Each structure stands twice: as C-alpha cells, then as structure tokens.
Length: 318
Image 1 (cartoon, rainbow, N blue to C red):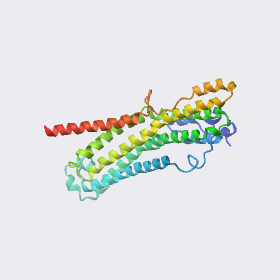
Image 2: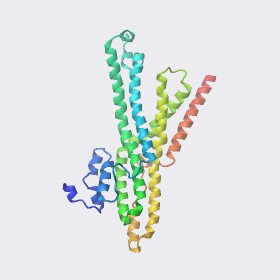
Image 3: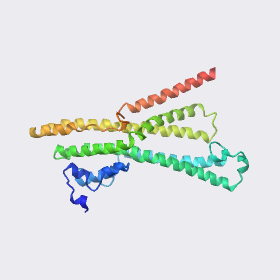
Image 4: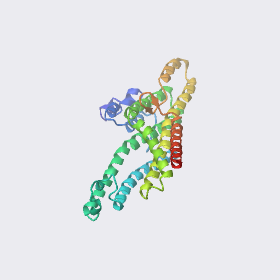
C-alpha cells in the first residue's frame, strides 16, 4: 500500500477524503470525482459497493438512463451521417463549404467533392461529440449518481451502528456536491436550462408549421431536435430536481431517527445534523433546480409554442 493507504483512518472524515484520492486535485482539473468518492466510501467500510454502482438487481431508473444515453449517442452519429447524405444529394446547400463557390454545380463530378463531404460530416460529429461529452458524462450521469447514492444510504440507515457514521458519509456527499457545482453551476447548467427549452420550442413549432415548406430529409432535423430537447427537459431536469427533494426527505427521516440515541449524544448529534443540508444542483450562485423547475420549463415551452402559433395564424389572416 502507498502512503495514503498506510495513513488511512477508516472511521474519520479525514480517512474518507484521503483514501488514495485527492479531491482538491480533481476540482482544480475540473474533473468530477464520483469514482474517487465511491472508492473512498468503499475503503471506509461504511457502504459495501459490489460490482457496479448499486447492489441488487438493476433498477428501472438505471435501465431508463442507459437507454437515454444510447439515444443521445445515436443522435450524434445520425446527425453526422445525415449531413453526409444530405450533402451528397444537395452539395450546394448553405452554409456548407461548397456553397461558397460560384461554380458549385460544376464541381459535382469531381472526386474532391466527396472528400469535402466527409470532412464536413467529421467536423459535425466532432463538434457534437465534444459539446455533449461534458453534458452527458458529467451533468446527466452525475445527477443520476447522486440519486443512486442517496437511495443507497437511505436503504442502509438501519445498518449503521452509530448515527455519526451516517453523518460522515453524508458530509462526503456534500463535498462531492461542492465539486459538482463548482464545475457546472456558472456555465453548463445555465446553458442547458436556457438553450434546451428554446430548442424544444423551435423544434416543436417547426414540426407543426413548417412541414410543408421544408423538404425531406432536412425536415427530419426538427423532430429530432424536439425529441432530444424534450427528453432532456423532462427526464434530466426532473432527475436534477429529485436530488434536492430526496436529500431533504432523507434528512427529515434521519432527524426522526435520532430520537433513539442517548441523551449524552443528543446535543452533539444535533449540531452535526444541523450542518447537514439538502443537496442542490445549482444554477449560478444562489438559484438551484427544485421540484417546480421541470413544470416551469414545460409551461414555458408550451406557452411560447402556442404564442408563435397564434402569431403565425394572425399573420396569415392579414
């Protein structure tokens, strides 16, 4: 064992946070240390993580999340291949490279044209993959891991010999929440909560009103945008709101459970529990995603889509 292993203290907060990992280094490198924390908790002996994230059979939430990630990854590949086939049929369509040449139609027969199509499809795939890697691997999976961790310690409350053991584990999750929000709260989460609803509105509006104006296969892009953005708003934002709801409910149940401790420990445990607060996926410095956020987003999307529909109808009448 290394130096961290020799100095590891299995029943202290210091032991949890120094068991072969360096969370500060993870934060400085803008990495979310979920795996680091899992190994720390596993070494501390508080929770027995078997192969995989949770013990027991795979839950419905895990299956839904895996399907969702496969859908998102398939969408990236589909868009890239779609760009290639679209350019094969209509190589002079703006804003692609060949549209900038005045003699674009005369270039159809050249072999270099196919290389340009492959290059543009590769650029599209690379851009989508680079942008979505942080969103899927960090925000989506990070939120999902929070929910699974909360479920795990909730199911094992009765196995803790002392309430202080549970509090130490929850403090570890609070450190993890700080690292998570330090990476996402100022840029990624605001971008998702602002950009994805706009994409859903435009995708739904275009699918309803522009299907007769946009030719196939270009039109397929808009239903795809609507489906992907709708899944993010309904599934992921709802999961992010459940982090706060589930952690608050968990703390409430633990505070009721503390009645079983002795009077000598009561004052000390009360201060410790007072330092435990519900986890939050933050938006900026003060706001966070709560249980009303998903409904607010869907209300905004439907309201704006109806407003655009009424404006289009009134314009056509005039």
